[in-house]
Length: 312
Picture (cartoon, rainbow, N blue to C red):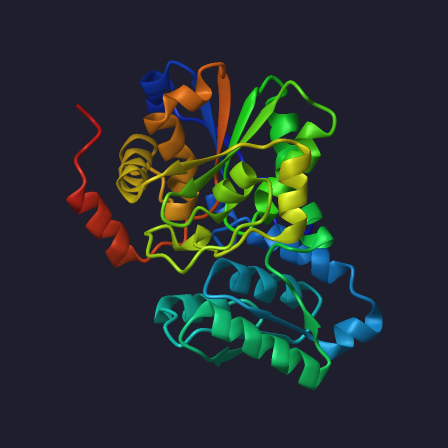
């Protein structure tokens, strides 16, 4: 990894441990420079570009974490980056993306899907290199470094709980961990309103869902990627569901008891262990991957205000 993509710490979460009767640690990808794990995969993909490809520049479509990851990774090599974002993208995310290497930002479309197809059209027109958010071998390999770090930091871990959207993160972690450690469980977590991966695993084939409204926008993906799905199927990785109320409670719990700011997608693993203990009966040493911290401050305040304290 690039020196500016840090080896994030594991931290004991005492409240999670006492609430579950397990030993629970959290993997703090919230501390990455962009506030998310996404820079790992973006950097691995971009560093492998040939000289002619670097000269052509890169392009991606994203409304948040992937945009920042691509912008940062491109800046390491002084590669021109173009980021296509939906018109509805919050201003704060646009500002944050501009912090990394001053990429060209194009606002287009009412949805991420429209922005994505516009980015593909621009890529063909310009000859630049498209950087996928998850359905790419090099991106998945970059995310796999997170799994390797967990094994090095806590060799006795028996369960790793990971949020799932397009599947790049959990596919990387599953590959890194389960290839040589069949005694460890990797468990995916999705919003019950955006559960394409869970449905796909249950039906043994990729299932697409209609756009859903969920607080966990970072994992609100209509369909798991082809490559991630094949990896999850190969290793029989289960994907469980949590609801928005459980996610909001987990955000409050992590803030109040561990002094952490975690975005809804990143808090999903914590919600899973707190509210779905039946999925972790055999677990004793659990890592929850807190994948990101990029939450609008006003939204964060609303969640803390509207959900009851967890400290009694």
